[in-house]
Amino acid sequence: MGVLTMFIDSTASSPESSMDSESKKPKCPQDKIVYDTAHGEYVCQDTGEVIEEKVIDERPEWRAFTSEERGRRARTGGPVTATVHDMGFATTIDYTDRDAAGRRLTEKKHELVKLRKWQARTRIITSVERNLAQAMNELDRLSDILNLPSYVKEEAARIYRNAVEKGIVRGRSIESIIAATIYLACREMKVPRSLDEITRHTRVNRKEIARCYRLLLRELRIKVATTDPVDYVPRIVHGLGLPGQAVKIAIEIINKAKEQGVTGGKDPAGLAAAAVYIAAEQLGEKRTQKEIAHVAGVTEVTVRNRYKELAKILGLEYE
Image (cartoon, rainbow, N blue to C red; front, side, top):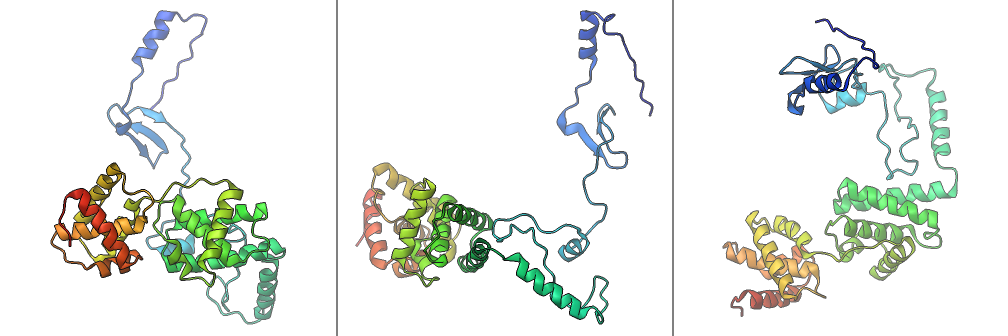
């Protein structure tokens, strides 16, 4: 298919002709434009017009069908991430005695051991890098135990790096600051993790973590909204094995309680646990207050007291 190009003198053109040329331009809808991989062109399916040509294909020239094959054929490293002390830029020499082709190393084996040793030494030189390396290891450990999403882990690493730049971590334990950054990241990302739950997996007491948390808020000028009881509902429902309809009912109960103004100053986990208890009763799913309290991480007395308050709003009878 040939393309005819016409060059017209701008001085000889009239307003009428320019308007006619603009009106004659075909307008293809976006859903009809397809990419021709063989010719590198964007073509309209209706009219056959070439919208754009000589498009550079930025995809790799190789194909992969499994994650292992993709990792073996890729020629780039992992993405830049704040969860590694060097942001993922450094090269890692694998602990293996074979080369890239799979042949066993014999003559250069001792040379490889020496290169690996010096590579490990040069990755961490300054005290800041050493601090970040220890902190990121602790962040990995806590994130795995708490089953945190990757975006929460990235946010916690970003907060810790800002704290290092401000000099907040100096004179304080890495465990306490990392625990505080994880709790702060969970609050920002609306991921329900209580301070007591984080404290159970660290060697630092709750009072020290709370102190570091307030310090981060003050020095980094971070504003965190109050925790919504709704954020705890899906986790409690999943832990109890209740149907998905229980989430909807529990959220509706909490919203009614908000309208009545009884949620202020109450533990959000306790309110969510009481709402899930009422939702389970309405669905005919028998769950004891003790079971719900264990999953929610609160006491049975808290669930009972919040249940009485919610039942009063909903007009339910309770013992």
